[in-house]
Amino acid sequence: MSASPPPLHLAVALNDAGWHPAAWREPGARPRELFTAAYWTDAVQEAERGLLDFVTFEDSLALQSADPSFPDDRTDQVRGRLDAVLVAARVAPLTRRIGLVPTLVATHTEPFHLSKAIATLDYVSTGRAGLRVQVAAQPYVAAHFGRRELPPFRFEDWHEPRVQESVAELFQEAADYVEVVRRLWDSWEDGAEIRDVATGRFVDRAKLHYADFQGRHFSVKGPSITPRPPQGQPLVTALAHGSVAYRLVAGSADVGFVTPQDAGQAAEIVAGIRGGQAAAGRAGETVHVFGDLLVFLGESAAAARARRERLDALLDAPYAGDAPVFAGTPAQLADLLLELREGGLTGFRLRPADADHDLRAIVRGLVPELQDRGAFRRRYEAATLRGLLGLPRPANRYARAGA
Image (cartoon, rainbow, N blue to C red):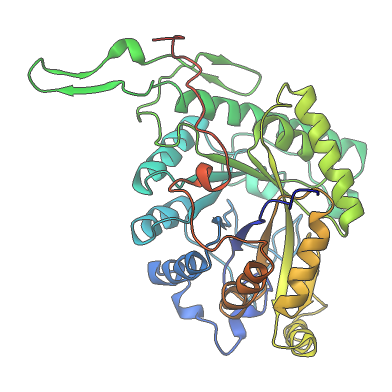
């Protein structure tokens, strides 16, 4: 008798009033609260009621734009957002088990700053922190910093060699960025803080280490100013489209988010990432591959489709993002997730089209449906995010064997 597949992992991606650009105009939306802590706390607490593994918080270094290549001047869509790391830190004390994964742009930020920010989040959340590393190839984003120039491109030119060469360089920089961050997290050994009042010793200096990273993009000495995080290594995630980004997932991440259209394409993507793991010397490590879906959920498929059509009617053209779009009932979504799992996916990150309606439908409709099918947890079985995902707490790379 074949063994039953392991339960699915589920995450939710939080973005503005929802992933559909017109979601802020829905009757149940809360556009006046988007820049309040209460709005984000309510969303994460709802996700935690559904026993979800983690939430991700979208972020960027430029205003949102309907065009992926250039800024726009639209005033009919949400513009402006709070800092993802600070939102996660505010939410952390008000939640207990769900993971908190803010998005951070590696292209224009420093890994030293990020390492201590996420380490701090891991302390504040008692071991539930992660990060989603992202690159920014747009020249108008680079112009906010004035440190580098990036070649202009249109999204339609994405597959041109010159664009791919530039993007590949940014992803290699992101891989170096993650390596620096991981070294800094390990630059304090566990137990480096002695805190012995009698002897006056707070730190064992022999347990602090230089990261000593020298690369094309960064030169970082270390050690960090923050002790090793509770998880040892907080979760590293990345959204991946295409082979260049798949290599980043395979070589650097704990979780990759991908956007297959069906189980066959999922199997091809997963196989490519597994091959990349082997090439990177990580064949024995667990790297989760989650499928991303934007979801409209309703009591009937017709109701879900009608809501999508109503929101699309508020735009110039029907909304189409980078991920497949699902419109239907929670039971139909459960069918689809279990079908896609046959391609080797270990979980899913769902993007609520309407952050109010669809998040509640995920928690109160989809989760019970999956539980009834034995495909999702009925309680949190671990206190840390790595524990929820079945990932061990890594050994410190600098600690002496047997010390």
